Length: 149
Image: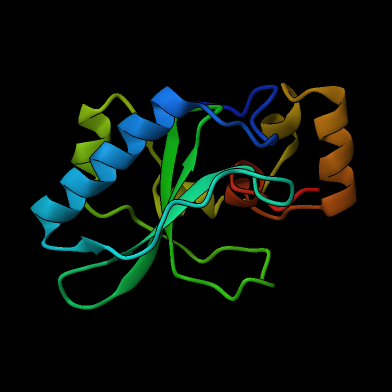
């Protein structure tokens, strides 16, 4: 993800069946390679969540959610959270190579934890800038994987 700035459309829910299929195939491939399993059905982007997500369990029993923002082909991972929580606890993506081989970008926990700054929002559309001003996401990850309504 390094060096890429958010662009217009990144904050909006976007369904992309072809990208979803590539991401989900990579989730399954990565979990097989990593000794993990997929544990939930895919949740689609919708009002209040601009990304796909699916639950997995790693070989050591650790549960995670694998997230996918189709607008920028970006994959992230987070600890499972309460459905009422709006901010994710990002972690590094397990088996990231499976996603890269599928042509997807992989965000690290450190990249997503960056404080959100003016440089991150300057390429967003006007309505997205209003959403940022209203919701006030604190980190880059909160912008890319958001709860905006």
